[in-house]
Length: 318
Image 1: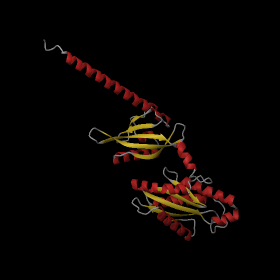
Image 2: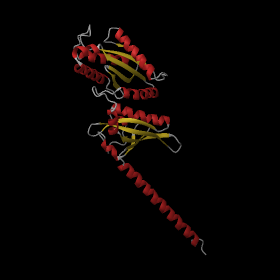
Image 3: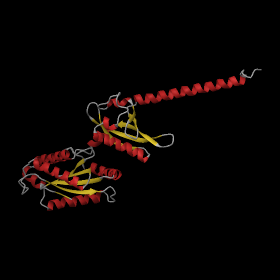
């Protein structure tokens, strides 16, 4: 029998192999279809970036974002696509995932097409090449704005709109950890209105409420960067948590806050020698490697506030 004529057993094996390959191909096509369907229809932001911050893939749900252009999104740097403060936040978290070679979870904020700021719960994790080297990151983000707003309602001071003491206690440890991770100096600032009881006694509590609202307004106007936090602790006592380049910048921000209250020019005859509402502030600077906890730093800031009062009020002290 000629050697080039396939035997029945060979033909059967080829047929089985072809059937197996067709099945694998069908399964691959189905997997690809499911994957593309997930990317196209999942109500999530799913994207990948390379190690230079360039977007290499983004699903269709990115169309909810402000300024999204499907033709010019992939292939551009995150710093070209988002405002600087937002881009820095996004890129910092990508770098952490790549450098630490693990998934990280963070809240990130971006603007939607209707110009509203939305908060996303984001998981970012590293991507690896065939040799096990990190060659990019993937991000999966879920919009939690409604749930976050409901949660924040429970930790918001109704009069001033600032966060309350409960939220301060929740955020302090988190911000201390973040400062340690990012090797930044964290500032705790305490402030209160000079002779506020005397103000209430002379002008009445409704006018006193207006003073507290004015102080909150001055705080928000001064500390308006992403990550700056302002709180009404109780009564006329306020607190702020914010990162800075160091003590000089923090003191400058505190003094700007003090001046804003002074410039409001609210009459306060029981506050000599100023004759108007003034603010005293105490600051403590928390280094990245700090071993002390919230209560110790709060006590230090309170002593600094006492020193500001002893200096004659209407001053920031450290």
